[in-house]
Length: 228
Image (cartoon, rainbow, N blue to C red):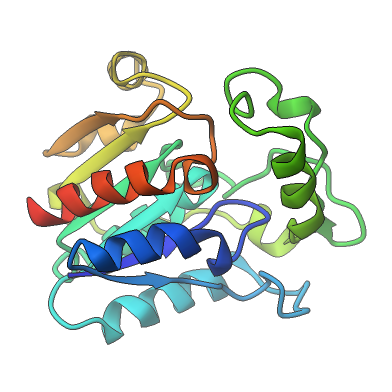
């Protein structure tokens, strides 16, 4: 099965290298995506531009691919389910949840000169970054790609309720499945509260398991694809 991999803020397709290799050995075809504004020099890229690139990858895949979103890109993966509900086998969400319609995509950090630069490790102290050593932190910060403001502040538009029929697996790295269920049941994640098929998988890592636990993450994604 084709597995489309979308990294969160400040990441491009290269972050999935070790996960992709492991997925190939498990019999799947990983497709790491580098979207407009992720290192191509296009600070003017918008959320619509990124969504169009994701949909192009969905349309190019044989059969029904699984779309994987990490962190903020969980919303992009869910937008793919909204725009192509009949074309996806499953959506996997790693370390995040989809935004609801009418909300900004990722308006979490300060915009400077038209982009959102990596803010340093202060906001991520604790479980998010606990498994990243000093070298990994330096490498991550050096490679971080500022996110165009047009992506971060783009408004999420959801249009097709058939998205709720697409099976979802929530991969829980820095939080537990029990916490994820609690947030959904409390109304904090309205989109998943309405989804008809939601599974949860625990992963003992921080917020970036593709960096710190690539083999374990690949096994989880392969298992999710195998049951799609």
